Length: 457
Image (tube, one colour):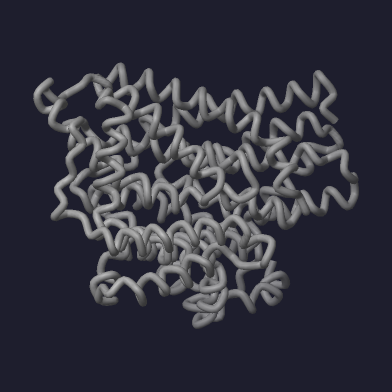
């Protein structure tokens, strides 16, 4: 075993190097899996550890023990995700300061006539639509403050409504090339176009969204969350739609909404001109900080640093899995299991991707899996095309399984916490897991039937 150790030495550092321990590639992989599970256990034990501290402990341990070098750990952080989050948080902060969300909430309450069921359906639909053309994170950064505002006005518990929005954003994002990071990765590695996704994935994503919303509706009705809580007089006052003018800064609102709209436009055309969403968000946030007249210190204090640092820590822990070939092993195992049976492959790739994406950030997983499928494509040709779509459906819809399955989930939980509402791991799972189960099983089985029975191949 010692012979394998030397080739792996370049990727190790920390105590492993200090004590000249020669670990084989397999041993390093096992160690990184162990540290990943430990980090996960701490995230689950949120009574004792804040999730950001848990991710930082995990990141520190992979570095101190040395299963990943600081350079590799830094590379493992998905800079696009971090820049995108950072930029959009700044833009949304300024929009919030201008009173924009109060205004939107007041108008939305009028449209839904204050009915909790309508609030659930209208907002889930809006979120899914936004998510198809923006990334889910931008969408929830924008929608969560509005949702909290409405729920408080109508005296409703915001938590289930916030979870409903996140689930809708993850499902809606599945439909297009730019809606969800796994799709962007599949698009670039497999050379798939916007129209390919609309044709192959969108029909299943739309169906999954409707089914997921029905499941959510039934669970919320059962929990008594869809009963109106405001009295008739209170409702009448809310519906009059008067917004306190002292809360609005119209000039700042024009600037911030203008910048927000330009940002969205640049997200949509960014792919053609080679601009990553993270770069666009950072640039536009800087422009807004420049023209807003607000103190940069004030804007930066409002950034959800705990969320950003949580992701950086988690990316490092997952990076250790990646550097030590854990995803490669998983992917090779999948290929051996599939053999030449593409139809069986649809089921395997779809469900395995969904389960793994519920527990690790789906970005690094999708990337490893996409390279493996690329290798398969070289051997098998376009006959394995359906596997790309199975990967997309599994990786995107699986993000609803747990609180850590998708970036949007964590971001929303942090916004809720800032407003005094705690969405913990198990509260999220109570709603997310059934929705994920129904949507993943339906979408992948229907996709399988289309290809295996009706010869979609």
